[in-house]
Image (cartoon, rainbow over all chains, first blue to last red; front, side, top):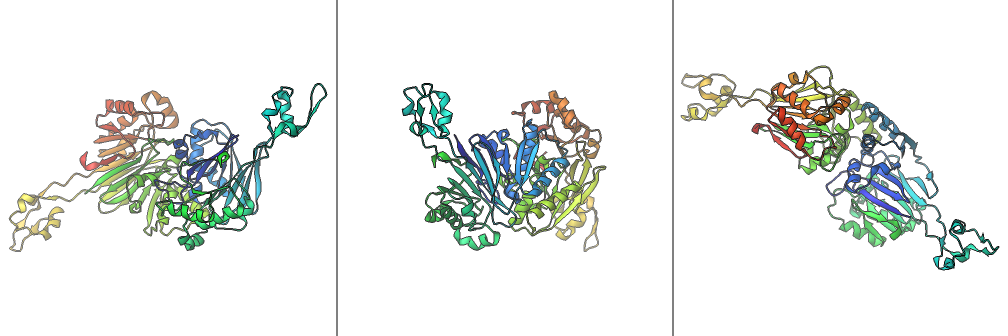
Length: 306
Length: 306
């Protein structure tokens, strides 16, 4: 079971040669998601060798251009490359109008369907569920309506204890019941208790995305105990007035949120183009939350190794 | 007097690592223009060290995303970087709606004015004129309303013949009259005929941009005797059916147009991502029009050296 995140863009509004604006690709147990889709996302996907036709769901946090200006271009490229598989998009309601309008003005008729779902900016809401995961949106505090996202694995099956099944009396067809916590009856009438043949399941992992937002005491509750939190830290502490004015976070805000949310690891991104080195961001986040790093374009996060 | 064009994107709809979609920067006698503005244009401007706040006019040929999806992002970045100088944009009328809508939804109020001019898709029209140049739009033949652009220097001043003014009787304050073809009277009453002290002016240069279009017998008239023609050649001759179906040009179409228009030099661009080498494009255009080259991202064309 794999759960990885590739940071495609870790920069703020102004793209630079080092950091492009927000987008990230999530592979959670072979579900392929894109979170945000700034200008240039399709080139970043190519650069990091991610097959973009695999993406089934796109989550757009808000309508600042540095979070969605690459979306219609990506959809157009998917179309040109012959996609026929539906795509599901979550975003502010006006995003659908923008997509339809731009495709119509361009005279494009897509060869695949878009299932559009408008986000709710008031509460934490489960927006997607299948047999292995759940995705939630939750409100952030920014200049315009903005959501964060939480991708969470469902409780996993118990693990078969290989040491205990060496005598071959337990057949492979019994595994699923044992893994689901059910006792089994063998052909000779013997009852095998599932506890005797299984180990605890792997822990469920979860990934939280919070960009863009000012600090808010509600956010830790929304993302409590996430394995990894990606949080914006547009500014250093000395620019806290600018952070306040623009409803963004400083390194300190991000690290405090990570601490209160008891996450395992924090990555900060959406770094302002004014900073040419990560050093001070790194210093400031780790002063408050030790297991923290500054994200960069191309960073690959393997949640199972956190 | 300088007249240069930097090709920022020479690719067709699908961006690749080698070619990004259409945009180009024109410096004509220190007037700074952008023609088309695909996704990623602002990064290309940075890459080729073009100071984008200098750009005063943007010309958008049509509403296919590979010609304008970088526009609102560029305007936003200009704003973030504190621009206060107006910008003038020429494009299809709906483009203004898109710009206003995206800025409004993003909650942005620009710190500079946008002067928007809707293009006319029926005739060749002079859309801009100042003391050194004229810009024309003219209709192309594409799937949706599309314009080409012609940037043309005005007739230049006569050149002072340095050999003839060595005796110092002609003072510097007489130069402008002589350059304008006016005779002058010296203090002693002597009349100097302008023909005796001047040389013919440098020829006026002009740059024509034709992307996207199928071949049309009207185009050569619109761009007659341009110094440089940038024409799309999305396809090789063997894909001529595809070119016909998508209202694009082949190498042959582009070269024929150059020949009929009697331009000095042809560059072809908007090359489909299916081609990994330029070789065949080069071969096919030169078979018809010898002074022709395949454009590439970062190409700098100095019209005075053509």
